[in-house]
Length: 248
Picture 1 (tube, rainbow, N blue to C red):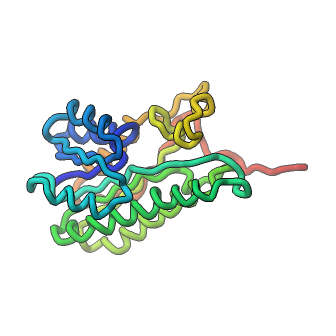
Picture 2 (picture 1 turned 45 degrees about the vertical axis):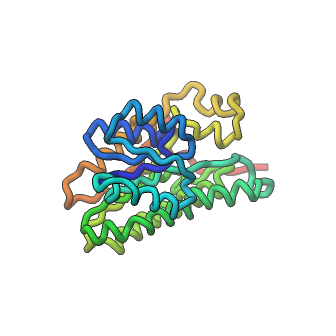
């Protein structure tokens, strides 16, 4: 049995891989950048397999995993970590291509991979799906528009999966981080603008990738009869804010 981690080359995904390797899991690290994956594999050793593929290519992912030996071929833990935010502007001027890309990665790819590996978990009567959501799925903010909507989908999809799987020994968890550093999230959101990305974290002490990895490990390491539905986590410097009222 193995764990498949998407978006594993940097940030949350790489930290999750390292944490699970430390706990003696067999892990498949999936991402597009082979050079980053090779570095991670060299660090983690033989219990880490890598797949340099696009998360959108569900069939190719399944085909490649089926070539692995038995220890890795049977995926019983799926960690849907791959995701992104693009832009932070008003919906009326947002780029529709950004919206569609967020829906493609954050929603459709997650759904397709879940559907691809879920039947095997059900057949084996053993499995755990861990989705990396966001507090943006619960709390609105200007410019969050489609990104927040995709994470709201992930939250409800996770809970509805549990409604389907309560009698099949399959666990489902949604991890919902707040402000988090140590990844490329803001750099991607601002399309490579390092100054804009760095300003997000000025004078803050955000969550780290290792914090999210510990939350994943906590949910995964509970007794088999325990399901952690969701973990909402924020750094201590962040809290849900008062509703904005414009007095123009």
